[in-house]
Length: 198
Image (tube, rainbow, N blue to C red):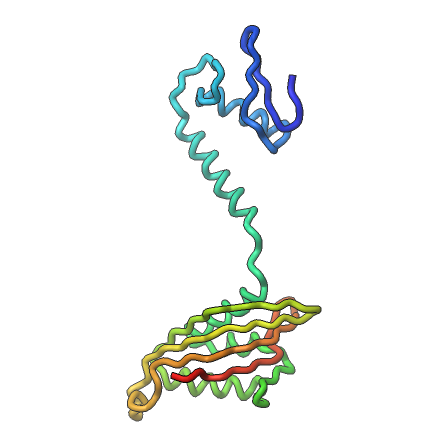
């Protein structure tokens, strides 16, 4: 006797109910087979109780993969911000500019070409940079999203031309980005940045 979501086993005049499953026939059959081989489900099986390590490993891997598949997908706006940060840490200005919408304009009037030029200057002035984000918040609207966060940049200024004598080794900024869907991804259509007091 069985019903959906459970497996019933008989042994003589005794009835054993165990191992509640979500899966249907295949899942139930696999679970019954696994329990008989492991001898750990609380009913006589006629097999030795020594675990089959390969079968245990296979079920463990299946459980891990199933758990990973059930995780919610990353917010696309968070992913877009992460991509910008990753590009900055690689000093890849082209990857950053590609994340800007064709009609991008910043609060100070800068366009995509201005941002590209500014990034060229910054990356040339620093031998290395390390960019991190904190306090990221995202507001979703109709075909638009607003991301706010604090950005911290630390870096090693170049020794060329004495740049290391006056360029800051760290700075903090308040960033606000307005992102729009463009070409199958989210791109920055507007931005505002403000340096925090050191």
